[in-house]
Length: 282
Length: 176
Image 1 (tube, chains in turn yellow, cyan):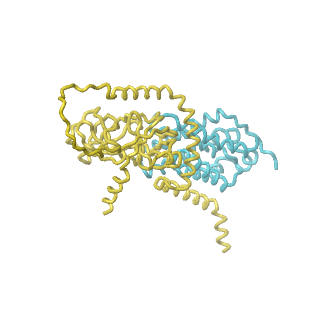
Image 2 (cartoon, chains in turn blue, purple):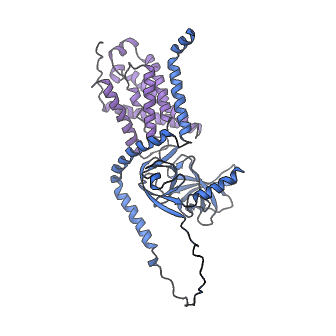
Image 3 (cartoon, rainbow over the protein chains, first blue to last red):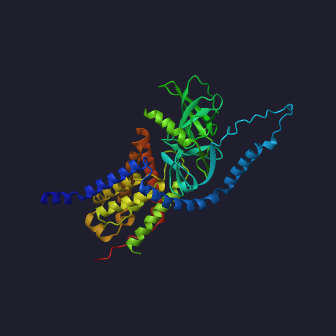
C-alpha cells in the first residue's frame, strides 16, 4: 500500500498529463462524429452568440461587396422575369377539353430559407460555418446550404438558434456533381490544399473534358436540388492508378467572404434518405 | 497589478486576438497559419505547480477549441506544452537564482538566447503535436514537416513582435 502511494507521488505529474491527454483526444474523436453532445450544444450557443455580434461588426466592412452581389443577383432575377419573355403568337385558339386534369400534378419540393453567417472557417483541414438560424427557425440536419454564387455546404448540427454547416472545404464533404454539357456524374471533394479549388472525381476517361467546363449539382443528391452551380474546371489530370480523371474545379462560391446564405429544405428529404439507407442495410 | 488579475486578462486577450484577428487573415499559403495564442502558456509564472500548469493549459486550449469547433485538438497540444515547459526551463536556466528573483519567463529574466531557445522548443512541440493530431486524419510526410516548420517560423515571428510590443518589466519578486 505504501509503495503504491510512493509510486503515485513520484509520477503524479505524468499521470495527470496522461489523463488530460486522454480526455482531450477523447473529446476530439467523439465531437467530430456525434454532434448531439451536451457540451457542444451549450458551447455552440455561447460561442455562437459571441461570433454573431463580432460578425455584425465585421459585416460593415464588406457592405460594398455585399451590395454588389445583391445588385448582380437582382439583375439576374429581373432578367428571368416572365414579363421579359414574349411567346410568338403562332398558336390557334382551340376548344379545350373539359375533363378535369390531375390537380396534384405539382408539389413544392424545395423551400429556400435565408440565414446570416455568424462564423466562417477556411484555414483548417475541416472547415465549418456557423449560421444564425437554428432548429427553432426551421433548420434541420442534412439541409443543403447555397449562396448567390454557388453551393456552400451541408448542415451537420443545429441548436435552438444556431446551426453548424460542414463547408465544401471539409475532408469528409462529398457532393454528387455532373458536367453541364453531357450530364456525366462524379463526386466533388476537397483535398485540403487550396480553398479556391475542389476535386472532381469518378469521371471516366471516355468523357471529353475541356478547361472551363461547368460543373453543376446532379439529380442524385438528396439534399441539393439539381443544376446548382458548383464551379468550372480549372485543371485536367489523369489518375495513373485508375480509369478516371482527377479534375480541379474552381469554386464559383468565394469562401473567403460569405455573408448571407440560403438553406434549402427538401420536403421529401427524410423519405428519400430512409429508403436509401434501408437498401444499404439489407 | 497582481499576477492573478494580469493572467486572467491575458487569458481573454490571447484567445480574443487569436480568434477574432489572426483567424480572420485570409490564408496566403496552405503552410502558413499564424498561431500565437499559446504564448499565454509560455508567459505563465515560474512558481506554478506542474499540475496547475497542465490543468490551466487544458482549459485554455479547450476554450479556444470551442471557438474553432475542433474540441480537444488545441487542448491536447497545450497540455503537452505545459508538461514539457518545466523540463525545458530546468535545462536552460540556473535554477536557484532566476526562479527566486523573477516572476515569469521573459527576455529580461532569462536573457536573449535562452528565452529564444525556450520559446522555440515549446512552439515546435505545440505545432508538431497539433499537426500530428490533424495528420492522423490527413496528409503526407513532406506536407507534415513543411507545415510544422513553416508554422513554427511564423509563430516565432509573431512572438518576437509581441515581445517588442508588450513591455514586460523584469520585476523582482518580493521576499515572502
